[in-house]
View 1 (spheres, one colour):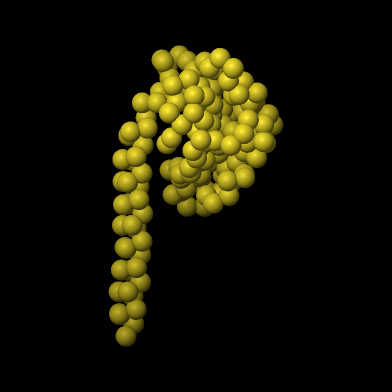
View 2 (tube, rainbow, N blue to C red):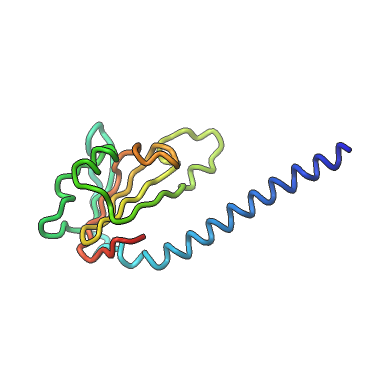
Length: 150
């Protein structure tokens, strides 16, 4: 009787692990098609900056003429950003490798990405997976040729 319960528990954990692996593989397939639009002209176009409340982040590329992104500062909250420049064309969230570290409670377990057509991408760290109103701006990727979709 005890062996059956143990076997079912192990099987349930194995299925959950495999399902997570399938989602990761599917996600990486989608990212491969989106990567060309996120690359900067050259590596020297990326600069590390310190923003509001000592948040560190990166700014990649040059802003498009008339870009709304020039109003943004690293460390701004997601709600503050969307109130300032409007809703994104597309958005999504993903976990980082730090989410798998046992007992890691830092702010870089999840990332949220907002995509703006003809402007670029904004990446937020912190908050939780389902809460799109939290997180702080850690990366601004300027790209005038941004398609607007992930």
